[in-house]
Every structure is written in C-alpha cells, then in structure tokens.
Image (cartoon, rainbow, N blue to C red; front, top):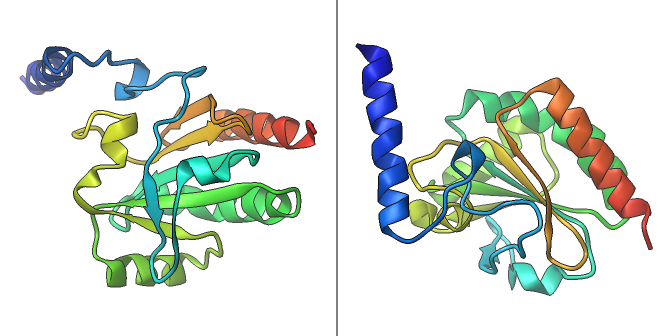
Length: 176
C-alpha cells in the first residue's frame, strides 16, 4: 500500500510539472547539467544581497538546505572542511540556500553547524523551485562553472557522489 501511495504521489508531482510545461529530470530537478543556471537574487542571512549572475567568473556551489534536514546536517561539516575552506582560497563561492525558514532560524542553524560559508534565505522556497520541483526534498547541490553553466548536480549525501562533486569543483577551480 505504501509503495502505491509513493508511486501515485510521484506520478502526481511529475504530472503537475509537465502540466506547467516544465521538463522534470532525475531527482526531480528542473535543470540539468549543461543548462545555464537560473538567475535570482541572493539575500544572505544578516548580510548582503546580490544576483547569482553577479558571480560570473567564479565557480559557485549552491547547497539547498534546511535546519530540519538531518541529511543536510550530516553533509554540511564535509562541505565546510573539504570544499569551502580549501576552495575559497582558490576563489570558490559556496552559498547555502535555506529552504523557507525565518532569518533568525537560519542564523542559529549556521552557528549550530559551525559553518563559515554564508546561508541565504529562500522564502516560500521560490529559489529552490527554479532548480527542482517545489515539493522535492533537500539536500541537493548545484555546481556552476565560471560561465554560469551547471556542471554537476547531487541529491542527498553519499560519500562516493560527494567525492566526485569535490573532484569536479577542484578541477574547475584549477582552470584559469
């Protein structure tokens, strides 16, 4: 019975996206590798605002996250230690996009997780919905090259995939 409900829910989600004229890719993404990343305004919790397109010329990692997401919490220390800290010296930009939580919750989340990369606000999950079906889950990462093209996508946290992502990020950073 549970499988039937899950299958039916997935079918309805896919149907709603196709009715909206959007193609749905693996892991409920609305974008794929090779696409130009959708542009949006980033508003960091307690910080500045800027557009994703303002970061052209840099390699960007968007981490879609939320304080209630246990998988996100598991992944974030690895992002901090293995990607952000060594990558920022090479010009990498990492931004956590927090799904639909108040600013104070997002600030506390960053403090609790002991991360130093910025977390940005995503009221109503509107930014998330540019990249994946709104009903789909976090954690997911979108890696964007210096030209604004998506070069890697992840869903959940699996060490092998994380290491592939890390390799792609550092290979991209080594290109001048």
